Structures are given as C-alpha cells and as structure tokens.
Image 1 (cartoon, one colour):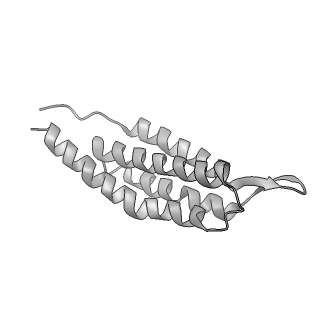
Image 2 (tube, one colour):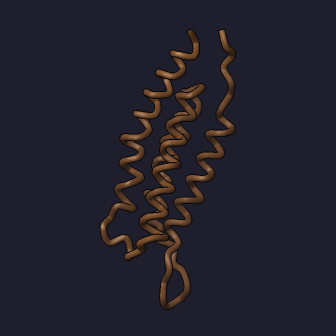
Image 3 (cartoon, rainbow, N blue to C red):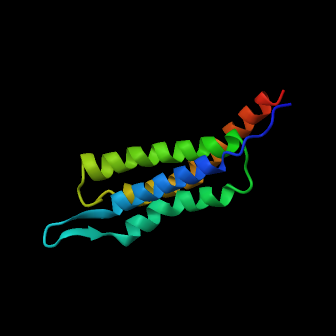
Length: 123
C-alpha cells in the first residue's frame, strides 16, 4: 500500500495563481485614467478557486491535484484570449461565464478523473 502524499501546498499555490489570473483579467485599460479595476470580473474570476479551496480539506491525492490543474489551465486560456489577445471590453461576456463553467464542469470532472487515478494506483 502506497502512502498518501499531502498535495495541499500545491493546491494552495494553484489557488494563488488563480487569484493572480483573476486580478490580471480584472485590471483593464481605461483611456482616461490609466487602468481600472472591474470588480465584477474579479469576483467571477475567483469563483472556481473559492470552490476548489473548499475542496482542499476533503480531497487527497490526484483527486485534489487534477481539478486544480484543469481550472488553472482553462483560466490561463481564458485570460490570454479575452484580456491579452483580443480585448474588446469583454463584450461577449465569456469572461463572466467561463470561470463559472469551470467551477460547475471542470472541477467535478477533474475530481472524477482524480478518484479514478487514485483507485488505479492503490492496487
């Protein structure tokens, strides 16, 4: 039987990266005064990391690590495409829906895959 490793420090690093991504997405150019913080974008951006943070005390092993990696990867893609490659003032609203979809879809799918991997490695 393999010992369970505590991957919570890595999960906390992923949560920190996600909060930084949410802040990067929320600080947008304002042509009158430099930059502006869009608080609603920031709140939408930290939703998946709040949910993931609530899961850190219940999950162990790959079931904890894989959902965090999936959410951070999806958020990196969303931030790059919406904020840095094609910023249009978030007119399509994907910056609001994307993180919520990550929390509702990617987290449960990642937990299921992680539990499957945990089950295979314990044999």
